Image (cartoon, rainbow, N blue to C red; front, side):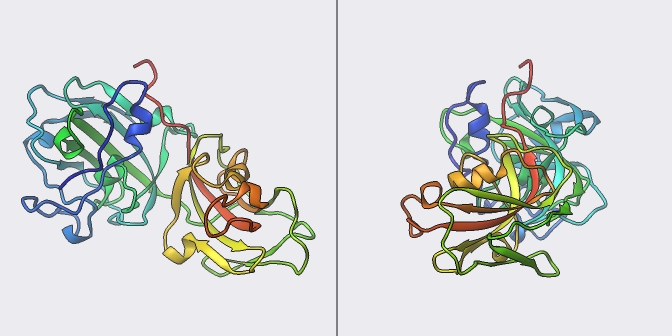
Length: 321
């Protein structure tokens, strides 16, 4: 198994690097997880001497992790410190969680989710996405909700000249998969939205000329934390072209939410997220200059309905480290 290559780490670079996460199809020598069918896991990692040797004290999210000297880091290993009593997590699961990433050689905390949490409880949204898995999602994957897990990751699984890592992740509770906010009065002249029983939106484009500037309408107003510029936001969304009146993309069609930073999407999409609150549903109509600038939707006015399910502030090294 080989994890996605990561650049050499420094205290300043750790945030961007660790968000790259890790992925793999399994190793011939690995044994199945005790909690789930190994064939469904992002990474099939068994307990071993390294992951068993890491000690964790405290109650999540305030954990103290001790990394002993002399760990071999010869393979990816995963040890369940305490098994929760919830449903086994897998692809598409969306839960609240906490995690730490530590340098395997020094035990230094490189990343602590309590420093990026948007809420007072210190928790962050964790989406298990097999296409773009983070190391903390790999730790939580295939284990019951409520579990605390240690993952040890050798530099050889990431790329030459990199550090070894220790990850501790704790999952807390399921998060809503649709916007739960209070419905707002719709704005005349904009597309209308109807919702199926499961929350899937249908967008109807009016038979009028598209607006020439950015239009943002709050359809439901949530009472969660506010999305800041640069946040990693977890959403459900559907997109329709004003020009063709056809849907071109939808997380609903894929069967799971998506997560990305506000700066990693269309300009108009990001603008519709920043300043909104978790639990909100937002309609955005973006002119071509704020949409797809070079792809198949170039020169088209795009409309999205976005359910904001969670947000995590820009990932940075743990405070004071």
